[in-house]
Length: 399
Image 1 (cartoon, rainbow, N blue to C red):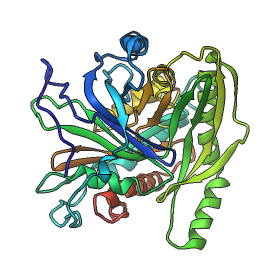
Image 2 (image 1 turned 180 degrees about the vertical axis):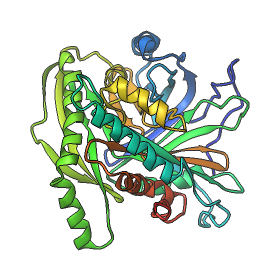
Image 3 (image 1 turned 30 degrees about the vertical axis):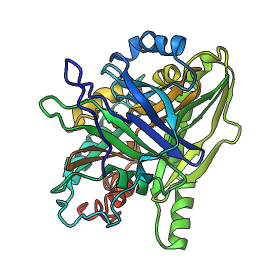
């Protein structure tokens, strides 16, 4: 069973009106858009504050704003205003009792191939070595690759969401995306992100950046060794510290208090270990909406690199598939500006019978191309499993 969509469409064909434009679920509860959906005028981050102002100034109690911000800040976002949230998670709605059929799914097709991805990693490392002593030279870039899957019939989005929501350590999400030119089939970004970009309640804010990753293993001893190896990795600790410093520096002008009292710790999902840091702050202006702060933070070095503009330019040059809303931000706000926004990772774009899965890895001096390709392969695991395929299906063609 898939989420129902209305036929209403804006003049430019991009604003199909979904019955449910966004839904989020984690261990804290769930937010599921309900009631009529009203599009927020599309635009980039420079006009965001003005475009969402009417929602925060005139909405009724219970109204929500939510949706997706693209990876590229210059591209238009896709946001909706709904009247309320309800307690019905899409994956909990009645559906067929038969298991999801995947026998007719095509073999995952890597775009780019793992070998070409490794070549891009090598190119990035060559640039970092050349710019090591150059002021504002490239010190990190996050390079992504994709997997394409295709079934003979429409992918059951609710089944995928239900499976993703079984992991209590992530935020399962679904957001509607604009239709592609010439293709009216509805698109959805569906995922299970482990990374909180920004949460706001009153004057209090939180962020939980992740950078530095290792694959979870079935054998308990090997899994423990993988975790300890990540914890003791100078390369991964440096990669993580760059992200934390960026977030602290970006949020500091908006805060009277800001810090990371617990420091870096290990955190885990069902498929990956990560290094994470809990950041907490108190805003100077409690009325600043969470979505506006999110736009200031996004994209962080965890999904882009350092310096950000230099890394983003290299991403456009080296990645063969545009990111669109992957590695952007997804989330919601209430009329008081309180809410939560997450990094759009561990996700897939679902469109009819097709799925494009995304995964990236942070490249710094000390990275090894084959290990980075293996890391991205492991990060596909949660979505592959939710689609009924083996978690390690993207790890077989790395040699």
